[in-house]
Length: 516
Image (cartoon, rainbow, N blue to C red; front, top):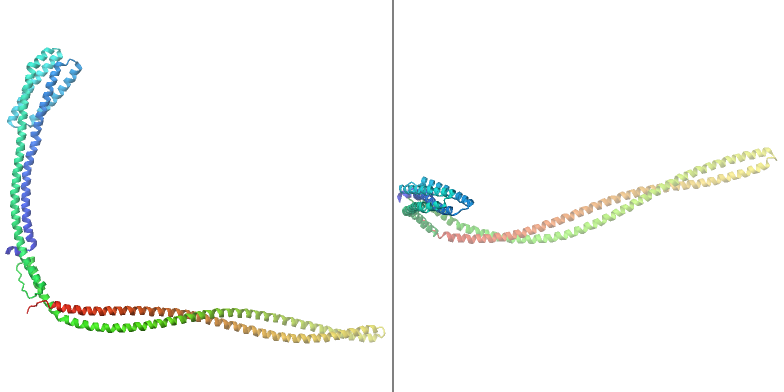
């Protein structure tokens, strides 16, 4: 047992199983040798004795068949049937010769050789007698053939059958003896295998008991030690002997026991500190939970205010969009007014140009009236010089002069009117130009107002979007705060649970009994 304890489990198991395997190899070897002997005997029985018995039986069958055909040979007179009968007899005779050759090759025992020689001699005489009978039948001497069959052939056939039966009996006896030999060999092999198997079983049981004892005793000690440690007794002393795995297990248990004692001592010392710290953590989490709830309430109020602000900013954005649309309409109307004023300015410029041309035409008419007046004056002078002959011409010249004067006066009046009209047109043109410039300034101002209103609308839209995002952010902050509050509550619950577990740990560690 000491030797086994110094062996490791793998060599120890290898020794036990190797011994069993060697016994199994011995059993298999002896069984193989026994079965080879049985196989050889069985093979000899099947390949020789039964073949010889079958050959003798076939020889008997062929002999009886030819005997029957010999009788038919002397009784049948039809030549065609005789030819067929002779052919069948020749075939059987050839088969009988082959069978005798097989027996001559296989028969080795002296008594078998003697009986086979008697069979061959009897068959030789029988075949010679049959040939004589066949010759007599062929020659037409049927009476002589019948007489020979009765007196010679049939007795020789009986002699042949007697020797053949003796040979068959011998071969049957030899086959039965071979079968008995096979059975006896099988019985001996079975007995030998039973004896060796029983011995192997006893040896295997002995090895198993020794191996089980060498393992179960130290394992039982290890189980007892582990049970005491499980019950909290860490003061037990552990002794380990041997160099196998179980001894290493005991030494490992001893080391584990020492380290576990140290760990339990440290845990026992720190468990109370953990309980105190967990209580403080629980109190701090409770305070944090209250502050988190207050913060969540403030965030909810902020979220409500942001919603109101978002509504106001959205309303401002809508008003800015409407103002932008109105400014765009006013800009379009101002542009149309500017275009109308421009058309008025262009019309006044056309009237001014027309007035100037009329003034020029009036000037031309005034010049023509002045020249006409001079011409009329000249004509009057010439008429005065002419005396009576020029009196009528003088009257005409006077009328012409009067017309020229009136034309000149009318032209002067028209010129003064045209001049006043031109001045008024120039004033209107200046006013229209000034109105066009003013309308341009108005259009530019309205455009700037429209752009400013558009920028205000865009800014209001962006502000509304920003306020919405701020509201969403505040809502998310509210959700996060609510989650934080829930987490704080969970943390407080976890801290309380930690405190309870620390108390339980103190109670659990108190179970262990440490060495002094």
